[in-house]
Length: 112
Image (cartoon, rainbow, N blue to C red):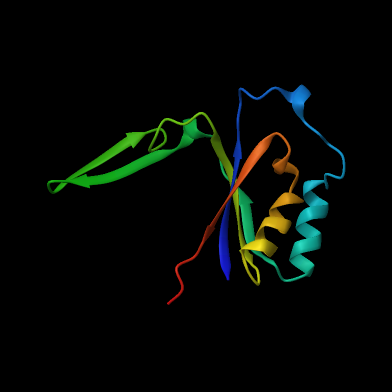
């Protein structure tokens, strides 16, 4: 199964709550899951202030600066994972450094 893993940051989080025990460095995490063939691709994205939203309503193109929706959390990156099932995807996500202090959202791809 393929999963889109959205990497988000909560800018209002309390860093003193973070448990850093066992957290991999992001370069180590990438190397581990790239070499295992689990991480198919991924990258950072620029902050929400640099986002552009595009919609079409009643035949009119609307282009807006900023993100689609106001959110307390900011999307800062993504990874595409190939896992046997959701349990494996959860294990992979749990080892990502942003599981501490951020949030990782897993969304399965729609299979044809």
